[in-house]
Length: 520
Image 1 (cartoon, rainbow, N blue to C red):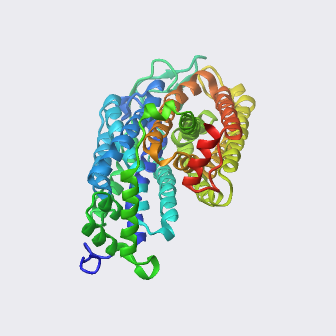
Image 2: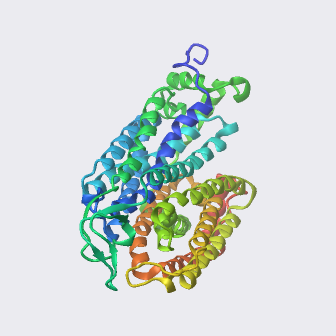
């Protein structure tokens, strides 16, 4: 059959397939990162081009994306199994485009929320589909590398979003509005006069502020840029072959061979016939293996323990507070005393450090034990967040007046905050082992259900952190907010030390036997 079956299309290099497919991951990163620069402009009144955003509404912009992502990860995975990986990525490219354009033209915050859910569906679908497509398309010799590139593209997408935000903030300036009346502060001093254009952060907390115009439209330019890689993904993925593994799973053997012939070099990767035989053998084993339902998983002591560990790993991954940096770094830097335009621009620094950290993380996961990497991550995060709380407590909050303005604080304080935030994101990205652990600890008979619950818990925690962080910053201040996150990570550190098992040195079959023996 291999000899008689022709390739299903033109030859495609694995590098090109990875580049095209990971545009979905880049969009994942861009759409989660771009909001950090867009939110400050949304706070402007509608007459100034903004959405008159309130503090509690700000958190929901990220929360609704996470809700959509949780739906996309679960539903997108099922659609991928039913219709194919490439088909699913093609559909997700359309959803990315609709979500990006819908968010861009949203006339009010509630319509923006609706399109953030749609965009989140694409983000979650991409997180569930792109790594599977790459893993099934790549030969054994570079499978790990290609899947790891997918994770790096997510972080690169965030870095790209910060870069675009910085450029637009420099071109248009920070959030500004032209006053329709004279504005005075609580001390009776005139802060701005009618017809004067001022930085919005200097007047947003004052009473009786009316505006005639502003540069609030800047947030729309930031969001619409996501449509470009979405279009590129839709065009590019249509030129790529479908996953041969998916074809075999659906017993479409000729199509699997035709697809493999487009991407394999038999001199390096071995005979295609042998690879198809191996796929069929795995398919037979999976078809004969009983899948456990949730009730059976929970009622069996050792699988219940693994499920609980997986769910806590998902929760702990987001309770690090990493998305307070991904979504709100400009807000944090502004709270530390920087003008908002500078805060948006300097966010590029933390984004670049995050990207470098993800590259270091690939090396660390390969080099060191999983638990040790997790312990390093949590220890570094506790130290970083404790330092951040201390800087806010000693160097920033004592200089904050009733209107929220910072007067007389050391000029180096905001830059110290930026350095510590950069160390924090480096520690998180270089020490992330959550995805590796949840992929390894579950036996095959519960892997689908248990992985879904663990990833679902991760997205729920992401949504909670996104919603409460702006409220915490406004109500509690930076010092107490980051102290709380530091204490939560102390609990996560204890969890890694006491309860997380090591998985690096055993095969998946050996792990299953070990866990059943140890946890029963």
